[in-house]
Amino acid sequence: MRSRLVLLFPLFVACAGVDDDTPDRDGGVAQYDGGAVRDAGSTPDAGTPDGGDETIEAIIEVVQPMIDEGWYPSVSIAWVEAGEVRYLGLGETGPGGAAPTPDTLYEIGSVTKTFTGTLLGDMIANGEVTADATAQSVAWPTLTMPTRAGAPEITLEDLATHFSALPRLPSNLAPADPADPYVDYTTNDLETFLAGYALPRAPGASFEYSNLGVGLLGQLLAHTASTTYTSLLQTRVLAPLGMMDTTFVLDAEQQTRLAPGYDYNGEPTSNWDLGIFDPAGGLESSARDMMLYAQGYLDRTTLADAIDEATTPRGTLDPSVSVGLNWFIGAEAIFHDGATGGYNALFVLVPDDDLAVVVLTNGSGYQTGAMGFAVVQAIRGRATNPPDPKPTVPVESSVLAANAGDYRLVNGNVRATVTVQGEDLWFMLDQQPPLKLFATSDQAYYVRAVEASVTFDAPDGNGDVDGFQFVQGAAMGRFERTP
Image 1 (cartoon, rainbow, N blue to C red):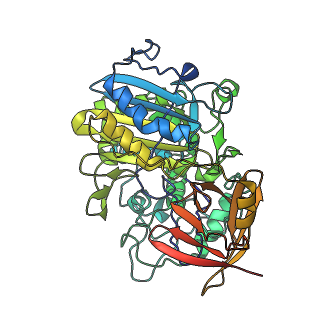
Image 2 (cartoon, rainbow, N blue to C red; image 1 turned 180 degrees about the horizontal axis):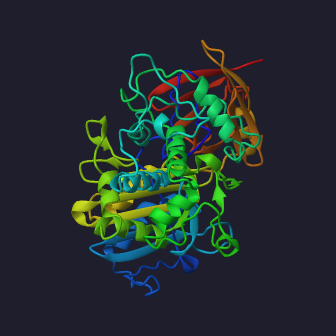
Image 3 (tube, rainbow, N blue to C red; image 1 turned 180 degrees about the vertical axis):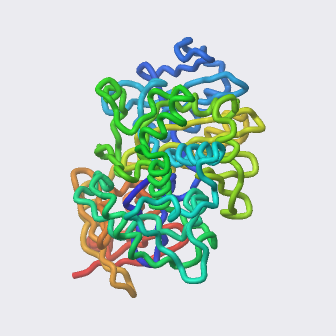
C-alpha cells in the first residue's frame, strides 16, 4: 500500500507496480549467514544445502541479480509444498547488517487486505454479517455513507472486492509527514470525506482499487463486533492460526528483528503507522508466520468456512482474474501483493499444487512483482522469465553536469529539474517527489519507482545537452532545456 502514486504528468498513466494499491502481481525474496544460502524442511534451522538443490539454484538465478544491482537489500522467501515448509534468504537487511532469517520482520502492505477478507469471511460464516449487508446498516452513528440516486447502496462485499465506487484514497488525506502519510488521518477526517463524497458511478458497476474502502471495511467489522480492529483480527484470525509475529505494533524484541525499509531511490525510509487504514495495509510479519497463514489456507483445518468465503470469486477484474474477499483469483493462483514506503511483499497460493509462496523484501522497486512471480515459477520448476536488473554504469561528473538543468515538456506546461547530487543525477517533475536516475550509459537512465526512462540528447559541439525523451509505459514525451 502506498500513498504517493507517481503520476509523472498528465500524458502518463500513474502506475506503482507492486501492490501499490493495484492488483499487479508482485513480490520479494532473502539470504543468510554472510551469503550462505540456507533451506529447510519443516525445521527452519535444519542446515545448509550442498549446492545440489535445483529449486534453490533456480530461485537464486532470479533474485540474486536484483540484489547485486541494488534493487533490494534483502529478500526473504518461504514456501510450503505438499506440507513441507522451506525458507531461503538472500542479501543483507542493510549495509553491514545481518542477513535475514525466517523470523526477520517486514511490512507486508496490502497483503494485510487478505486478512481483512478472511475476517469478513469468518463473520459471514458465523452469521454475524452478510456479504450483501449495506455498509450504512453496520456503521457507527456519526458515519454517513455516500449514495448515488437510483443506485444500490455500498455493501460489505463491494468494499472487499473494490467495487464500491470509492476512490483509492480520500481527497482530504494531507499528511503532515509524507514519510508517514496515514498516521494523522482521523476518524473525523474519514467521516467528513464520506459525507461529502459524490459517487462517480453505481456501486458494483466496475472495479477500482480502494485502500479507503478496505480500511473502512475493517473499521465497520470492528464496530459490529464492539471492539477494535486489532483485537478482532487477533482473536478471530491470528491467534487461531498461531501467528504470534504478525502485528500492527512491534514490541521491543520484535523491533530488533525488523528489517529497515528502503525507498525506490535506495534511501533509508521510516516505517509507517497506518492508523485507521490498518485493515488495508498495516501489518508486519515474518516468513515463518506467513507460512502458518499459508498452511491454514491450504489445509483448511482452521477457519475453513472463513477461507471458503474469502476465496469464492465475487467479481471480475479482467477475463483472467476474478476478485474474492480481498483476494485476486487467477486460473491457477490466488494472490495479493503489497507495498509500503520501504517494503514489498507477495503472497501466492497454488491450491492444485498444494503450494504457497511468500516473498518479502525491504526495498520498493517496481520490479518486485515480476521477480516474485518468477520465484513462484522457479519453485514450480517452470520457465521463470525473470526481470531485467538493468545493470548500471558509472558516469563522469562532467557528463552529469552537462545533463543537469531545467527542462520543459514540448507542447505542455510541465517542468522537469535535473540536478547532480554526489555521483548521481536526480530528476523531479512539477509536484512530484525527487527520483534518483540510474545510469545504463552516459545518456540513458531509468527510475525504480515506476517503469520509466530518461534518455538525454548527446552533447553538441559545445558540450550542451538540448533535451531528453521521457518514456513511461507506452507513453512518450519530449522535454527541452529552458534558458
